[in-house]
Length: 67
Image 1 (tube, rainbow, N blue to C red):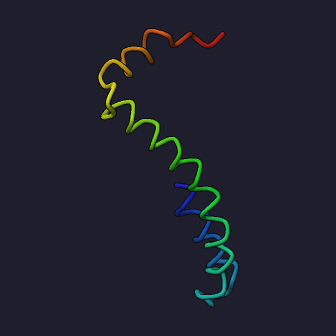
Image 2: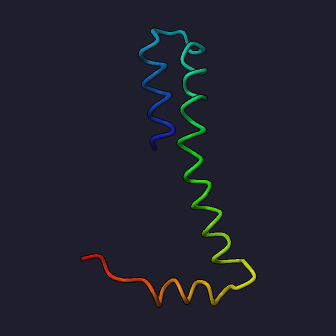
């Protein structure tokens, strides 16, 4: 939702110039998406890596409840 709301707010603030906010959006998008890509890669390896499904079982077994 963030990735849709932020460009929408920038376009609305640009008073009709839909191209003006794009360069700033691109600069902000890549750092934001980098952490999501790292997490997705970790999850992919847990589910489909060489150690799957044991890696998933280990995650569930070793997971501690939040206090």
